[in-house]
Image 1 (cartoon, rainbow, N blue to C red):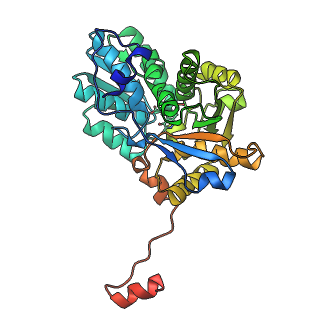
Image 2: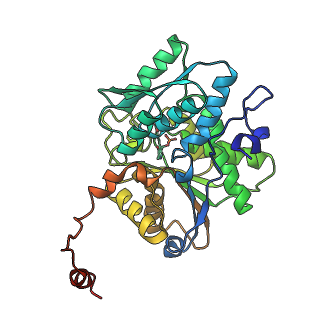
Image 3: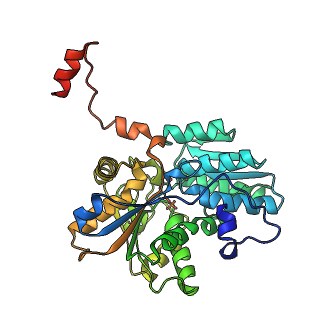
Length: 346
Ligand code: AN7
């Protein structure tokens, strides 16, 4: 069964909506082996890196592309820090749409750029940041016959809310806290939509606190003003003026949660910890969720035994540079058994 089929009654799917799929959704909710114990909580990682293009964007994209097809669209456009463009390019390729993706020059992780190129999208770099790219594509989509598939398109958020459904379907309850990264602020909005929809439908008896984390150099919601020159190693969330700013604040406030920030160092430490403690390689932006847990644990948030979910939004393989740039050189030995034994210390 596909994602759109499984949740069709809770999505904008009607008899005219094509039920398309690249195998998105149904991602693992992984119970942590070590991290949860460190903080005295029951910690689960919702690993979105197993989606077809390696990020959570595929959940929203499948819905947005299905609705675009339903409306007879011929082409789609998006601005992106990388993952949205990879996803839009893939779904457009498979379902016969033209894709135009507009990205900040030199600020996209290598793997994501390679994805957009190989899927055959028209890739255009802008001498500016993501916020500049979004402004341009918004204007173009208003004036020309092309569908915007950024999260300003409500179908994107509709699709993305299915991650919250899956978590509840597996846990049989709502988590006490849900931690996730915040960039353009669509995903925190989408999860909150999903949880509240399940709550209204009687599937859960209480709602989680939404705990969103921006990068310190790109934390407009935390600082309360637009950041003109956002900067962070987590390029996926290098965003200074989030499109869903107000909706994210609403999700935060209604859920009695927070939107806070973590430093690049905290992000990279968390990324390494998720890999070395749990065997899961996520990209830097994703790790801001767990960096947030570390930060809040230090502040004494947890009393013990809380059920906590952190979303790991994207696959680490998309951005190998982020790891290699921060990793010491690898030892090189002569072609010799003894040298290997000596180096390993057997
Ligand atoms: C891995 O691809 O904005 O707060 O253009 O790729 O919903 O924006 C990506 C965002 C978190 C933030 N983690 O989610 C894009 C883009 C990863 C991401 C986010 C993104 P939102």
